[in-house]
Image 1 (cartoon, helix red, strand yellow):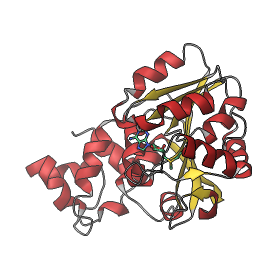
Image 2 (tube, rainbow, N blue to C red):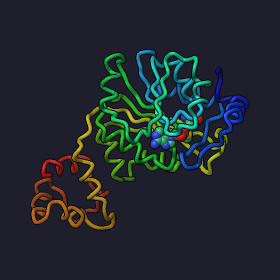
Image 3 (spheres, rainbow, N blue to C red):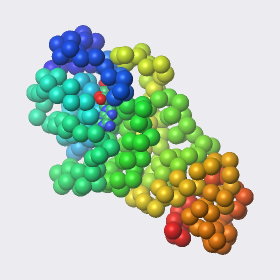
Length: 271
Ligand code: SAM
């Protein structure tokens, strides 16, 4: 099918397969072709690029990705969409849809395989909002050799993730692998059903491999945000905590969000 995102095409497909958007899976379908084209333009993909798309839904974004990318591998959790996607994307020879929960995908292995054929592999997704952080963490912690991640997230989340004054385990994880930018604002009115909030596209450009030791360290450091780094890290470093903080030149009364990514990277050496 051409121009899947058109409101009439979206309605035709959902009616034909007697489907309604599922709240459980965070389904808000894009119904504005122009918005999708603008999103794809921000990603700068080309025929050398393989795109991994999380959650194709009825295929509106996947279709436009397939026109620009060499290959599109989609992961969709909702098996109700099988027949519908066969019809909407069936004619594309460079799209494959795998019905699997993305959080269970061995991303490192998959990306290694795809990189045998494509010089760049990136992730592009209109993310289900209920698991935005889980998905971003899953991608980063997989240590997959990706060039970039482009994700539609709630506007508030995009603003927090790109605010250099705001720190959370996820912002530190992102900072440790590369740079993040807010590339485009997206109105709630271009989705069906329309969510209660506006959205934005964030892009993470990856330059460094993720240090897996950061995951545990950051989770522990932020267990109680209002407590000092000393109190939070005591659980992992025990009686050595004071000594280790001194060695890393970190003041023990700092709060976890006051540290820099370099501090956390130094601390991983003592794990
Ligand atoms: N890409 C489509 C679009 O832009 O119109 C749909 C986006 S919709 C916000 C999110 C999609 O992610 C839905 O198709 C949903 O079923 C799928 N999804 C939700 N959780 C998922 C998971 N754990 N793994 C894979 N797909 C998931």
